[in-house]
Length: 177
Length: 463
Image 1 (cartoon, each protein chain N blue to C red):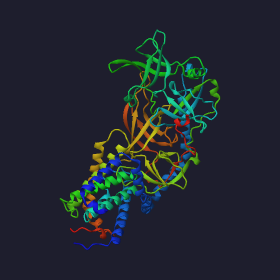
Image 2 (tube, each protein chain N blue to C red):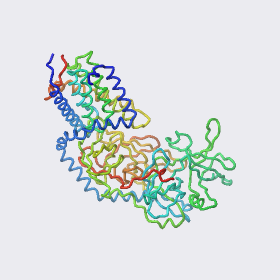
Image 3 (cartoon, one colour):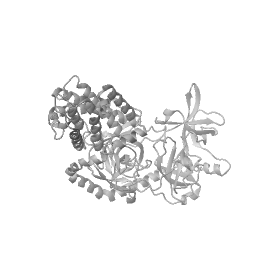
Image 4 (tube, rainbow over the protein chains, first blue to last red):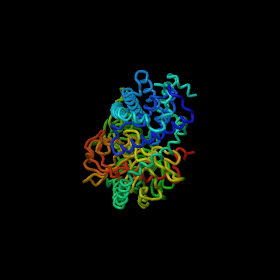
């Protein structure tokens, strides 16, 4: 069991998580600005999953809000769509934690694929529904989600351990593993 | 309070509630989320240093747009002049003894068959004057805006409350009187051929060409009669609920096919001044905004957060440009910031006009939707090519240069978008556009300002 961190340390930890998430989301946006956006990993969400692996259930709320906030700062989606998407995606990853250890390579990769794919599919679906175009492009959403899921899974597998050791995130480790 | 979220059931319920609120926008919830996410504006500044890596490419893109401005501005004005010319009637019989006043379509009012139009101030436009486009009847002037000189509202013939007197021309027989107005069937609106409602006044006929015939006693009828002879379409019979019903079939795109219309009247109208389009290049109507981050973290999207100058009045729908080049439109305005959809983003829609190689008359394309970006950087555009009416010449096709057209609030006509090839045939087409300016790199853009005086909804003008 790890020693509990003081609340002030955790607040600093959350602020640093937000900073890293914004930077990762911005880098990902800049990297893909000329492309069709396919095969681009959701780096901010992968960071959130890496952190979630060592958090308590109650930490899901700040984690989802801050992940959505990082996306809102670097993208144009409506805040409610991002909030619902981040909550749902991280909840799915959390549910997977019962079966797989998320801090291990297999669990981390599977959770990143599941969460990033679900988040991307949700954004496509929400866009079509809110635009009131009448037709929802399910196939297009599934294809885009699959590409983002694979790219995010690879990122989590390769870079996950580095993301887990980013400076300032240690106070967020509250769960024994 | 966070301890409640130790229960998975509570978290799941919260996720479902949030999802429902996100899919069916509920203004108070959207406002609350907007307040919660207000720090996103400042957080975006954290990523600002990343923009320094692309300064060279940004400068190159901006200077190219500025250098091309004089040539592109002249080309744009020439295109507008051709569009205005193309809106005027060509049939000599329709021109005889009449005056015509070209009006620019500013916007289509929501959920109504009404257009807000702009015409030369002091031209003598009054309600009930007929409105046409080329040789086709479009509707009539419903209101002249007292608060905004030179603006008014046109009621289209597709409006359920508009009725226009007409006659059916049948070979070798006397014309038969008929009344036309409104759309038959909701689906008719989304299909290529519109069906206008019709009612026989005398004996019933099954087919024939339908033309306006409103001659009658009184000032009102005299004004309306200036549309006599303009076409409405072809009469045919539709079986509705097992009963035959006369309808007028028209290939004219009343939904999105109007960028300029012509108000008709007596010969005195011809003395009115020439219409100058809402000038796309009037510097007073633009402000310069900073792109906070030249990228979008959501894969497949091309949206940008813009930092607006103090006091800039920008509305959703406003155009983004660099020189004479169209870049995208504002989607939301949040205080001193705006969220914009660039060319290539799925949230972008606009009215387009195509200048086709070897074709003198520009083609009004109607609604064009941005679908995404191809792997080679080409922009994919969705375009619904309307069916041509029977007997009409085939729609021109081939290599074309696309520009913005009138009819979208906040987007001036004549901003260049790019080049593409227009395919033949009706139906939904995906066009591959090579943009005149790739907006992905830019860190500074011009944003169209809202007019100083807001347009009122036509119902507000009425007692």
